[in-house]
Image (cartoon, rainbow, N blue to C red; front, side):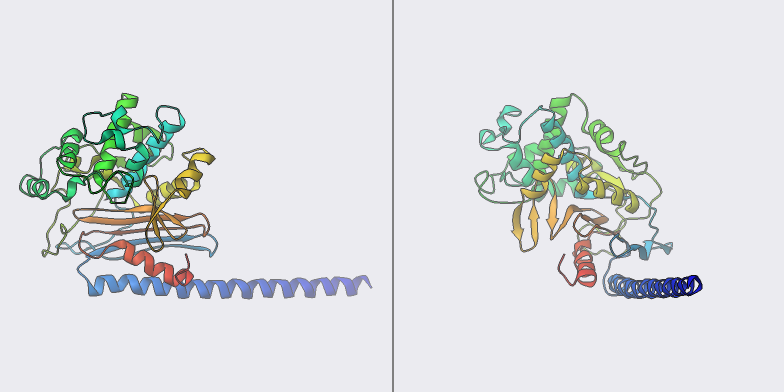
Length: 370
């Protein structure tokens, strides 16, 4: 009888092992199909557009996927391939960092989201009608300085000019508001500059110091930084190409002084460090549960499946941002629901942006239901 039980136990164990192995094989095969499809659409970007190179990172813990893929060139004349360890300019993904510091100051009682801009900068037009929350969620109506033609011409003709935050904000207020504060939505870099200036006013420290000590150092992001000025892109990096339109081999990696982007877009990072950052950003590591919930839930729909909150962009269940500077465009998203992170970086700034590839990945992974 004992021998029979032992044999039966052995048979059951063997069946379980075989079943487990088959299940694992099926999952592996299914995942490989997903990876092949994502690779194919990524390669098509290089084959059919002027984007020189792509780095794509997809980590889905539920599916068991940890995929980093590169395609194309990081250096066109020297024919160097893209490298996923390179640093790159993250553009407006920086806004989430500025916003995080601002919300931490709100939690510390240094200011309130319903405070009026006039409490900090009464000299600006309609400052008594603009709240801090409106600056965060892009409903202030304040003109976007980077849409000003005179400013753009100055940037093009004098690319090494160092812009002060005050000078840049003055350009935004030299133009009429898009709409009455709080009545509509329009993306404006001027909003985030004002948040940076408020942070410096309240803390007595530079915005660089506050971001370094509240965001970058706590996560030990050794290849991530916030720049205040200068042409240099720190760290080992490839080249960045094109400034809004295709000009063959136009290298703008270190052509413009980054002060023009400051609180709205001057940071740099690597794909893996940006993954670590956005997972903590969306996961709630920087804020209390109450403030994090406010940040993720109080969003304004700007188009189907896309909304904007307190210095954060929402696409489906994914939160994060996207960004673009001359030579560099990127997308950074994480979903708590899917337990998935997507980082995409193009070493170019032309009409095609990484969010296009993000949406293609969403179709492949989740059938568009993300």
